[in-house]
Length: 294
Image (cartoon, rainbow, N blue to C red):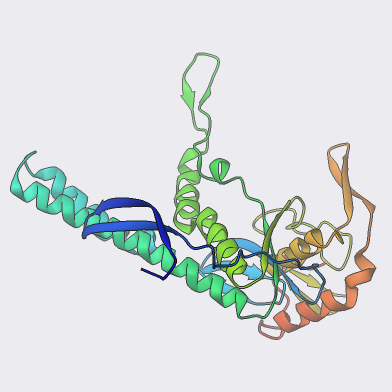
């Protein structure tokens, strides 16, 4: 026990691989983690939750971080173990043994996901930035089932749930709520800040123009013929999240169902934004993607 620490409570936890005890200590000599940092363009970083292919996050610096997909990788092994357990007699020794094996697989998935969250958070801190802006997500809405639909006779009709089931599983496997919580904790210990911002229209609007280009989720890239530049949707969104956090994002209203830019500050960050896009474009093919011409 550290000198001067007082045990306030103890929590005994039983897990599949043994018993654990969680001690909560109070040490008045440990200073509070508080940071008074003024966000600027130089010390801040925008983070976009990607969840596309093998990408996990996209940043306003022009690089992406990979995902771990711990559940997806262990899904077949978990299903096989669950099927074998279901075939055994309830209360039998073989069923209990398979139940413990199934629990260990779930534990490995959860630990791999948490370890990935810590490693990703430390990778973001290694950029040297002190303020991290991340998008506010409706985690419940992203993983809930679609409402059922009925026709005039009361018969249930397709509601798109079959297509959304895989997406729900991917969002749950990504565990962005856990990651952003860990990021805030790690950033606070390092004297930095993680700030949640509203992400409305950040994935649609070009970060160096007031044009709505990425109007559909299938549009992953955009070719700007005027600048001869390939724009990545996720990197662009990360820059817009940073602009939103710094209060540099345009003011947008909906008129007759369409979003319209009311007040713009795009020119104030034009050079910095184009530099990030040029850095990303050097890692991509220079050919124009089919169907994505400006």
